[in-house]
Every structure is written in C-alpha cells, then in structure tokens.
Amino acid sequence: MNRKQFVRRAAAAALFAAGLGTGAMAQPWPAKPITMVIPFPPGGTLDVVGRMLAQKLGQQLGQTVIVDNRPGGAGTIGASAVAHAPGDGYTLLFSASTFTTTPMTQKVAVYDVVKDFAPVALVAKAPLAIAVNKNLPFNDVKGLMEYARAHPGKLTFAIGSTGSAGHLSTELLRRAAKMEYLIVPYKGSAPAYQDLVGGNIDAFIDPILGSSAFAKAGQLKVLAITSKNRVPGQPEMPTVSETVPGYEFYSWYGLWGPASLPKEIATRLNAEVNKALGSDMHEKLTPQGLLLTPGSIDDFARFQKDDMALSQRIITEGKIRAE
Image (cartoon, rainbow, N blue to C red; front, side, top):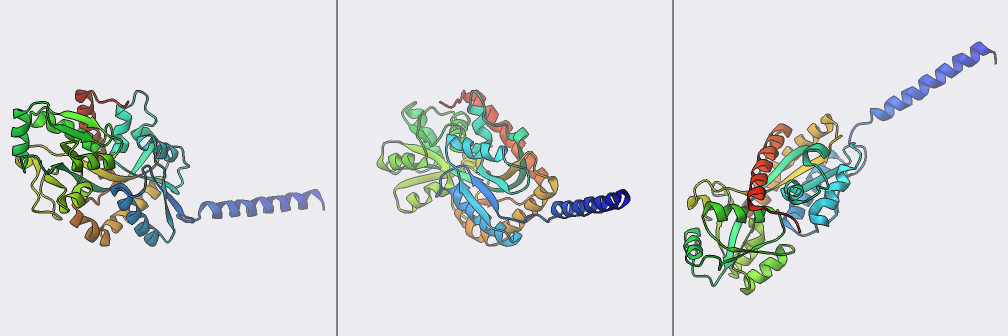
C-alpha cells in the first residue's frame, strides 16, 4: 500500500467512525429505563403519587420508569444523588416542598435548589388539614382560636419534621390567628398521629390524606384545610381562610432533574407529566383532596420562587433551625 492509498483509507475510516458517533448522539431519548428518585420511604402520600406518575410516564414514553426510594437526612440524601447525576434525563427527582425548605433550616446546606436542579413540572398541591384530638371541646377553627386564647400555651401541636409544610403551616397559623401553643417535634407523621389519637398531643397539621383514614374511623376530628378555597374532592370541608382571612398554605409535589438537564428533555418531560395529570390520575387523586397542577416549566419555576420566598419568611421570623 502506497502513501496515497493509506491516507485515503485512513480518511474513509475516520469518516465512518464519525458517522457512528453521530448516530449514537442522535439516539432518541429515552433509549433506556429512567430512574425516579423519591427521597423518602415507601408508603407516604409522596410515594403514592410518585409511583402513580412513574407508571404513567413509563407507559407514555415507552420505557420503564423505576422508582428508587432513598430516604435519610430529611430528604437530602436522595436529592443530593440527583444533583450529582449526569444530566442525560435518566435520573430524576420526585419530591415534596420539603425539598426546597430543608436547606433553609440547615447551618450548611447540602444542596442549592436553584443552582443544582432544573425544574421540570409542578405535579400537585396538597392542602393540609388541621386535625385535633376527638375529645377536645370544639369542632371548628373559631372554637380552636377561642380555646387557645383562653388557655395560652396549653395546647400542643405536633410537627412531623423540622421545616416541613406542616411545621411552617403551624407557625403561620400561630401568627395569623394570634394564638399561643406549644410545638412538639416528632420523627415523622406516623408517631405524631399515634399520639394525637391516643390523647398525648392536641393537634397536628399535616397533608390532607394523612388524617383522612383516622377521621373516617372517628379517631380524631378535622377542623379545616389550608387551601384558599374548598377543594372539589371534599367540598364539605371548610377552609381556615373562612375564619382567618388570607390564610393559605400547601404541601406540594414536583419533578426535577440535575441542573445540566437539556432543555429539550425537560420540555418533553413537562409535556408528558401534563398528559399524565389529565389521565385517570385526576380521577384517583382529586377525590382525596389533591389539586393537580398542569403547567409549563416557567409556571413551575415562578411558583417555586414565590413559595420559597414565603417559606423563607416564616422560617426566618420563626427562627426555625434543624437540630
């Protein structure tokens, strides 16, 4: 082989290799299973909604969406894993509003919500419910306020975790309704409900689904919910704002990717989430009091910014810090 033939063949080989590379890069997404990290244990409301969404996305995308529960560190372990994952669309985070508030309560934040993550879709807002021990002598928010003012510092309110939506809602209610009560921290909602039903604690503000089964069984009383308006799934349930004008607070669920997630993949995911929310997810979750929230990535980013500003104000004024 002379020099001219060698150069010609080398050039052809390079072009062929480049062609293979281009084909690989052009491989449509998704080309393999997707992992959805949920940074809390199985069984809670977040997990139930996340698994339902994962199933729908898997059907729509033609790829399995694997739910990976990674609890620990108030959700920071799972969130950090996603923050450091490749931005290829194959590792996503499904979490609650606690994801955005936890760094605000830490001395040294493990992650930065804005810098380390790309918002994809707001999935649902979950009104919280004010549940109280069934033996307390009142059945509505007005009665709660009158009792608290007549017995300052006597009422005890549980919180499931520091900086959670329930915690911030409890702090907001204290100021908005001008009440004084003792906050008692628990390690999760389950032990808080156990003590509430058992009469060891007076009240607990938690996502609406958490108290539903206990209320139906007559084990506790639900006074009101924290949404601005009554929810379609439970129109008989009054809102706190009917007694305390302007009071409104939610837990909420969203989907994020690493900060390096390509815009085109985020846009595709957003569209698929909106499609899923219009499916039987709506029929299953709305009767349970959840408010499904289809919208654009920009809608989610604005909502997250506003909600974080409100949460930061409550945390700062209440001097809330993780232990």
